[in-house]
Length: 40
Image (cartoon, rainbow, N blue to C red):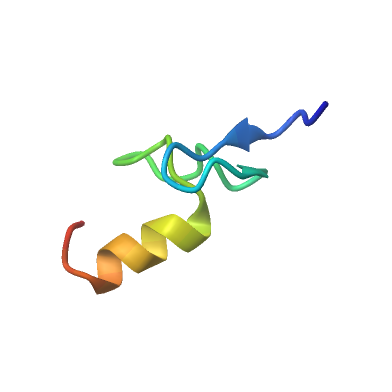
């Protein structure tokens, strides 16, 4: 089992989940995608 958090968008367990105060349930990759799309 992974000790990393699970991203709510891609469901992948990554250590970067929780690193963004404004969207703590997202990993770095999904955060960047949503930011580039203008949703964040």
